[in-house]
Length: 103
Image 1 (tube, rainbow, N blue to C red):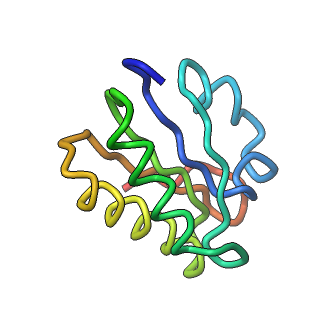
Image 2 (cartoon, rainbow, N blue to C red; image 1 turned 90 degrees about the vertical axis):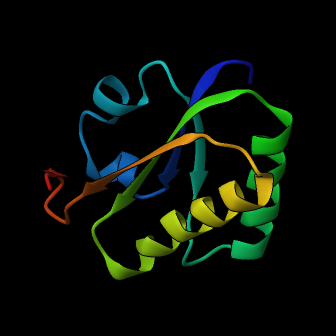
C-alpha cells in the first residue's frame, strides 16, 4: 500500500449507498469493518500496523449515521495516534435512508 488513499468503511455502507463504488471507493484501497460485531482491539492493532508500515496519503472513514458506527471513527483515530503518523483523516456518513449526510 504505497502512496495510497485508504477507505475504511463500515460493512453496511456498501449495501446502503447505491453509488458506493463510483462515488466513494474509486481510487482508494478498501478495508471493511464492523465496530459493533467485530473485535475493536484487533482492528486497532491491525490498523496501527498498516499505518506504521505503509505510506498512506489519506484515510477516509465511511460509516452509517447510527450510534454503533461511531466506534469505527474512534478506532481509526486511536490507531493513527498509536502509529505516530500524521495522516489526513476525513469522515463521511451515510444516513439510514441511504443518502450521504452533509454537515
